[in-house]
Structures are given as C-alpha cells and as structure tokens.
Image 1 (tube, helix red, strand yellow):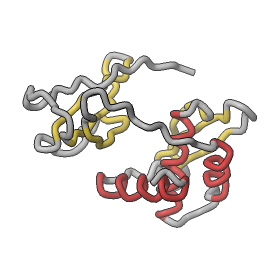
Image 2 (tube, one colour):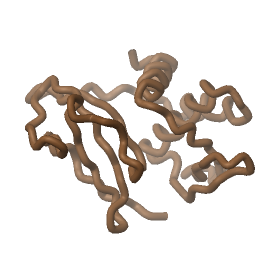
Image 3 (cartoon, helix red, strand yellow):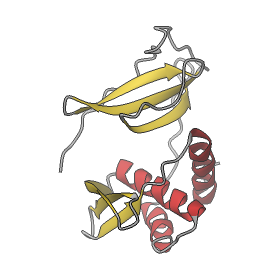
Length: 163
C-alpha cells in the first residue's frame, strides 16, 4: 500500500492568485501529478467544477484566525456498522452514504486503500481493506456532484450526531 504526504491548505486561490480570507468558502482538489497527490485550492467564485484529473474534491470555509476546530467524537464501530448495513444496497442514496462512510473510515485509518477496479456493470469500485480485521470491501464510487456531496455529508453528520 502507498502512503501519501499531502500538503495542507495554501489559502491562495490557484485560479486567481487571491488570498483566501477567514470566512471565505473554498473548494480543494486532490489530483495525481508525477506519482504524488497534490492539493489545489480554489475560491468559491473561481470554482468551475472538479478537473477530470481529480481524485477527490471537497468544499469548506476558511476558519477565523486562532480558531481551533472542534473535533467531533466519532465512534468507528458505529460508522462501520452503518457502512456494513448498506453492503447490498442498490439504492442511490444508500450507495452515496456508504461511499462517504468509506472515505471517513479511510481518513480515520480504519480502512486502507488497496486498489480500484470496474465491476461487471462498468462502475468504478474502490477496493478497501479493514486495518483491524483484514476484511476486504468493494465500494461503488457514485461520482457525486457538488450538491450531492453536500447533501450526503449532511446526512452522514446527522446520523453520526455531528450536528
């Protein structure tokens, strides 16, 4: 497995060169370049959508100076339970929720990325391994739009009690 060292936010819009100030909304993109994952930040005004080379992207707001974000208490086992319950779902909302839950479990280092493939339906699938139990999971990448990502994130946060 490959580990990636990804730089933090630049607080500079790569499209306009404008400094992103506290309270500004931004979009961040991860794209592979030269065998590395590179983060690029964009102001909301300059955002035209994720480039084709994007591995992932998300929206955020630049925090106030000195602001320490409150880290939510996450119960990995509860998140994994939600993820597992959606294993056989064909429902688009369930697929979206499961995908976002998988990304959260990867961020928390519970899941490790192993590979990406295509299933028999031609959909992109992430192949992830549970770092504790070793179970292998196949997770459909639903190719979410910006609005869908926001909606799914809100639902995951609501279910996990992060609101």
